[in-house]
Image 1 (cartoon, one colour):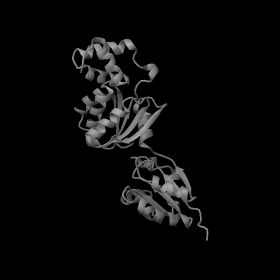
Image 2 (cartoon, one colour):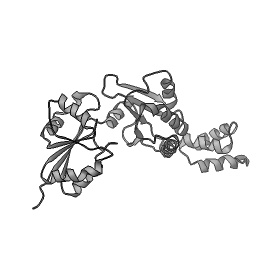
Image 3 (tube, helix red, strand yellow):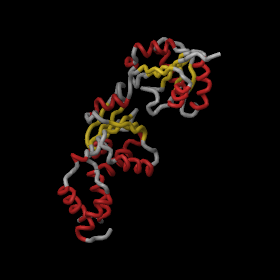
Image 4 (cartoon, helix red, strand yellow):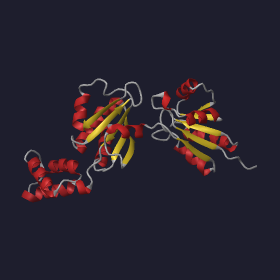
Length: 284
């Protein structure tokens, strides 16, 4: 007997304001054979608020691969699964990729029911370029790994979007200011679409100053938007680079001066170091 073709609806749900749920998303949830939810309690509350009652099954980062076979059996019976995360669009720093990949490989239909996304919401109001951007999810929680990731991203020319935990946002801004330069622009968007939605905009140095004065800065759900590094055509000219090295060498060893100018300009540290020591033969 050939298995029937089932369907997964990837349903975006509100990131804060229940009124943002689309009529189509509500219809999809109402018609689903089962709702696969990151947290069944959270989604149960959402369904109750919508006046709906549907079977729920948990699908989170710890059980997704073990749950796939069970859900594929349902799809094989021709059922429809509504996939939701706790907030926003599923699979964006949330579970679901393994299930979607397996369902497609098995010949089932996957349909999007688009809606709220913290990534796009933050981009739309950050006041930073939106023509090219990349999403980096959460930075590593541990300081050393986070700083290394920040160093690798320092020369990325696209606008970057991150999710961050409130208790780490100051440390993250500090690390970014160190490797990208304190003048790099950013926006800290907290509690998007909720009652206390707030967007802090400015340079990394200005945001750190605000963080020290505003007790609410490090509270709630946070999406961080960071300006990209200058494109090659917009990079500082050679005269600026040489002058910056000259000034910094008066206060720092050549290796450190080269590192700082590399962070500010996106130039390679090794090239800048060679330029720094070549001018007067100094050693680090």
